[in-house]
Amino acid sequence: SGSSHQSSILGKLVRKYYPSVDFRVVFSRGFRLSNLLSFKDKLPHQCRSGVVYYTQCNKCGPSQAYVGKTINTLYERFYGSNGYLNTTTKGSKLLEHLNNSGDPQCEFIFEDVKIVDMSNCDLRLRYIESIYLKLDKQNLNNQDWSIPL
Image 1 (cartoon, helix red, strand yellow):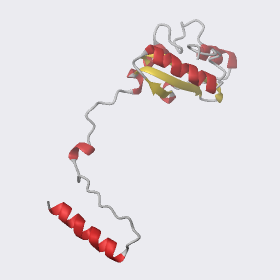
Image 2 (cartoon, helix red, strand yellow; image 1 turned 90 degrees about the vertical axis):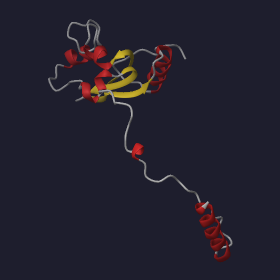
Image 3 (tube, rainbow, N blue to C red; image 1 turned 90 degrees about the horizontal axis):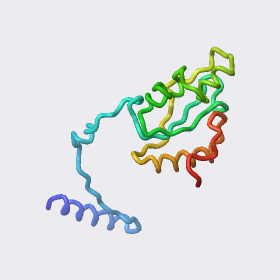
Image 4 (cartoon, rainbow, N blue to C red; image 1 turned 135 degrees about the vertical axis):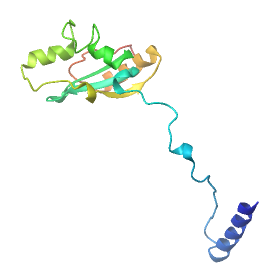
């Protein structure tokens, strides 16, 4: 083909003038429209499910952070009937921090929640959460693990 012929000529020229250079020609496909387009729709942050997430108090920062996991959507985990930021939820470490701080500037901004990993398998999420709990000793989630390592 034409491209292999051009490669052969170019290789001979380089070897002739630069014998110590290991020269190889690699052809790649040119521009493709498919490289610019994503075929999968990106889910909004609040609709993601099967995630390990990290959040921290907007004012206090990493000293008041929380690592957790949910198989449900993030929105359900934070605002659902037992959600961390649902004011009727009992035992929420995030609400406890907000109430105990007494500082109106303390807040957990849902849009700032970081997804650190994803899986559709709850057991894998529990292992990942346990690793983060072991490595990142944040104050609000005082569990040692989600599942023993």
